[in-house]
Image (tube, rainbow, N blue to C red; front, side):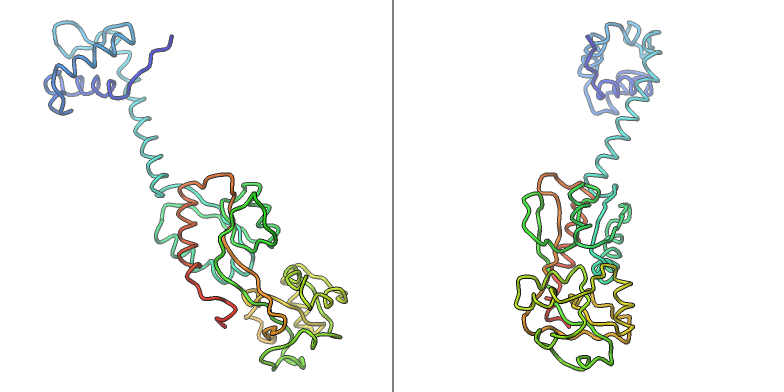
Length: 299
């Protein structure tokens, strides 16, 4: 039967050898000599061999000489592992993977990640971006710890914490008849060339749903969509946060009727716990984005 070895007893053996005797080792370890001797006898009983020669000397037996380097290696590995686990538990080491929708990745994550890295300099962060379906798949497959996205329908497999609301508007080129408007009603879009995108499903189930049925274009890629808009091919609808402000010829006009918005929040598995590093990231996201103003009113 394999004996159950105790790290503390091995430390005692090493201290006796290093200090040159039981008395000196007991002083260093803040133990009484009888307690130290009792621990050594227990270890020798477990191993079935004496570790020190008789006579109270700190002279190892041949078996003790064989054990010493192995005890040192095991104690050192134990201490290394304990320190590593402690650093992970205290969020001083580890890695966290986050997936976000592109609008969040480009607009909100730079400052959030800068703050996070400053607070946790030894944690590694991997950021992935894609549409809401992509983020959900990554979280479901446990390829990422957290997602920042919209949840289109309730799913018991996920835990979703809402952070902010992002109002939908119409995006067109600056020379479009609607470009100078302060707000627009969906009926004014009837007859316009509407280019659908991944967020257009926000209109489904509203009084503006018929616009989607009459749309002949669908573009999922934001770069391609922006190129079509800049070329004046048509108009589209986007949440305010997803509007590409860097394109000077494009305009965002809030959609007044119906008032449609997406809810952005933190997505994680409802069935698995987060690692300490991911817990730190979740707190950072909630503290940073959870205190943001409602994006429907913030522009």
